[in-house]
Length: 505
Image (tube, rainbow, N blue to C red; front, side, top):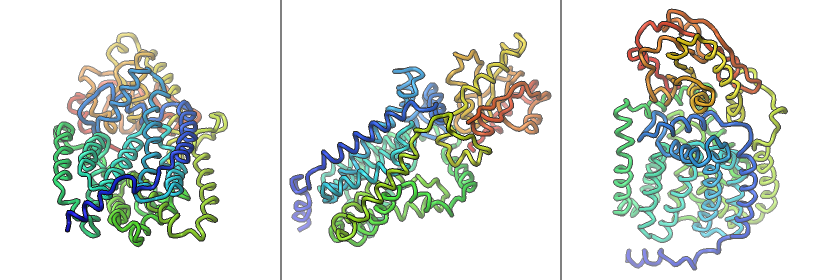
């Protein structure tokens, strides 16, 4: 009997609704224009500079991420050295692919062309899902891979083709080289399958062989982490402290919903309801628990609100199916204003504004609320100020001097243009940059960018201000109101001091 039921579930694709090529294609085309028009705007984001620096030091692991994004950054830099547009092309492409796959998920749910178009619309009117495609970031790649994994899993539920579970494992192994969030997805999927089914998912050999494959592929990265004291786990504590500064657990749910956009947020709620209550979506009921359990996990661990964004596509697709199938009397009146308002918020979020029209911020906290914007300014001013201070050093001291930046963003900005500006080696105790190397014990003359004078005096016999970076649109403490210190005669050798200076926040 079980074999008969399984054969019935493995229906041919002819039983699926046709794909909305025209509607989804039009949406993707418009988004492609918008994203590619945005790729050359302003300057590199701080993390993009960090990926470039990390990519020039390719390794099996890093303190705060896997090796995939630095490898992508390095590849694009080799193809088009120094090109801002080239660096961002992978982010644009994976975002466009995620839009198409999200519509395919709606089709797997049995959604009509209208449901597929609404799913794609919800994706592109999300201020987070679309706008993250304007820059290379770990969350950009991670989100797109979650969408692909979701589609493979949902298609397996409909067809029971076990090769789909294998390919889901391959994509999971790839995603583990970006971030360590995807295991939480599989954990809550397993819980949902135990509660609502299909329980046979957990009995499939393909699933467990896939899990073994993911583990084997992750071994080099895990060995790197073990040899460096598992800094990736320490990032959780650092991020939790950062979250506390913006409300932490109390703002997590409102921010997570806001990131979906107005229309996307409505479809998220509709999707959870539809998955748990609609008979048409009954085979996929276990997915209704996914966003709820992820919320519990990430609120409990005080993670960032976008950590669960990878599941949005699947839940919004379910919401679009419910929206077009079970709420026909009123959805046509609500859809247009919801989409229009959501689209307006996304257009406002894209980097269209002239640099001259952007107002500077008064504090780092204020800049943090729009970090994606202000994190792209001030790097040339920082480099110019540092190069001037370095050239002022006497020739004999300049030959042996090094740069130490208080922030990994500062260090990355200086490092990627070090040759052009004629700068010495760059170090920083901050985040993953601290693991790139220790200043040599022979470095008795240091230019320290940023930092607190009182803290520096605990490390050096002499501390004197010799320069200043003050970019108009910079972030205070990073590229604006930044003092460059000349620090001489370290009180202890760097080989002894450096491990105690390393910090992930």
